[in-house]
Image (cartoon, rainbow, N blue to C red; front, side, top):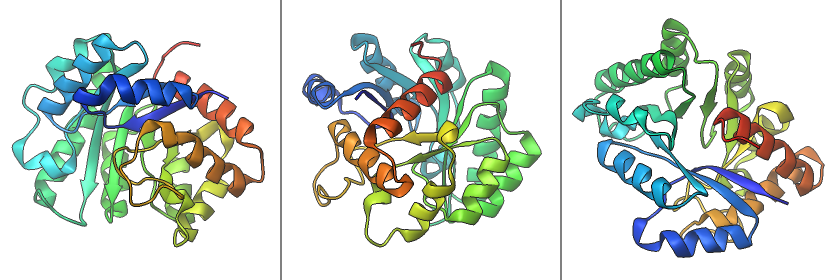
Length: 248
């Protein structure tokens, strides 16, 4: 089996070790996700020195109060494959909701201008997230990363043509709603991620997460769908390679 971790946050000082471990576990490609200008620049730098890593450029809702200055200029790198992660997070409100909404809309428009995929983070903000997407127009390739909604939110996202990406949360005993959402997600809209170093899957909970744990997330999704992990690996590889335009 071969896997693509379509959303992770890699550390520069452990990059070689993490990539070697991931590759040994069958995780052959990783998307290193920017959350502000500094982490976006760092992601591009890591992707430049490792051909198994690609970068995204974006401003996380936590950082929205600082605006998006300089982000668009970073999209010119051939190692950048998406805009984001961006969106709304009303759980912590580290940035005022109005700032989050403005910065989210600006990045949707950026994805449209550059014809690039969009990576969305949303937490406790579903109605506003969908309203802004509807107003700005959903980019052709859009993914809700680390999907934490239930069936209703999944249907709303899928009806808008989006992909759903599932993390280790799908393996948590308390995450019945997320598993119900995963069950109704068709294979051609399914992606898989670690969101490392966060959200280590069962049985690695409580430890720092790494891309090498991605097969455990895939196995959890396979149980939800009643298929083999090989089926999940094949579909999510093809979906991620196409979504981020990585080639075969």
